[in-house]
Image 1: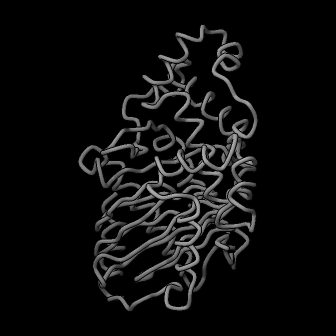
Image 2 (image 1 turned 180 degrees about the vertical axis):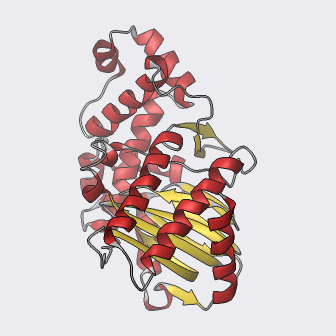
Length: 317
């Protein structure tokens, strides 16, 4: 229902666009990351179970396979979107398909100020080259690699943060040593969970793999990422259930078993905890979004103002 293919017109496998988005229904890209930068206005975005409000200057990264949607708050928004084929760029970055990028400028604008300026510059440079009449494939690919290198260096470390009720946020981790085994162990554990959540997955098994006691591992996971082992498994299973609810005709019972829950009821309880609705309600909401009046809707934007902002981004790095 909501898998969307990206029409790359260049061999460099990157796409850039400027748009005023009124409403873009839930969709996902299986082999690409999508980066949006708000040049003007305010928009609401949903990224799986996460919901955020972005304003001018904010950058947000939708990772591959993350269902997401955009809803306008102010009608005169301008959004720069850069989409990158991670399958193509894996030849430069072997673990790119396993890397999760996070930019939480909507929370930490001041702490991110310097890095955000450079991120603005990189995105504006890609868009400018992409729209150039004499676009250079090699130059565009070089610019895209520089962006991916910067993201890998500064925006791949994250942690979970509790918000109101049972909601959670994924936020950029500030204090992180890339070469510290203690810091990096949590991402190996999270990767293992996401690779094995469909089967029976136990803390004891991971403790054995990591040569740790179950007690120590349980405390380490909670301290390192903000959620318990059980909660991480629940989120991984619910995220896959979300994808299947939108991209397949499987019943809720079938999906529950496929993602590792014992039954439909167990899926419903966990899904409602994170998404604040049942799986059936979520599927119904997608059906409504893809009706005629809820198709992607765009508005017009001030092209001169967009050029002014992009020019300022190119000059501020």
